[in-house]
Amino acid sequence: TLHVYDLGESRALAGLNSRALGAFHVAVEVYGYEWSYGWNDDGDTGVFACEPKQCEMHTYRESISMGTTTLSREQVNTLLDKLEPTWLGEHYDMVARNCCHFSREFSIGLGVGEIPRWLYRLADAGAAVEGGLKAIRAKLASRVGSGASDE
Image (tube, rainbow, N blue to C red; front, side, top):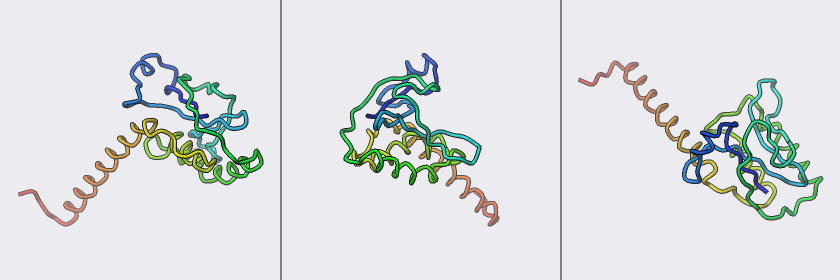
């Protein structure tokens, strides 16, 4: 089961969120625990677990059934052991590497497929804008470096 939260605890943000474009925290429930990913700066994994629908940092919104995994508890633990070192908290990025991206990878690993695209639509839009800005900066830097001008 995929648990969807509105970011933070603001009622105003929750009122603005929609499936068309929203800012969500996402977690995957399997075998009685909810798994997600978040930022930390202690050099450790950002993968964490909590009771289902009880993430203290966000406001629970809805649950989405993703089907049933064929993995045993032990296989799920092995999958998490494999994911944890590649999802370090210090590598968290709000648009390019967040809880939605982790939940997508974890769900695929569980064999239940992709999470719904609307959950990370805003992050993808932010990543596209960020990528465009980087390209513009690089082009400007190369023009300055080569002595080119707009005249």
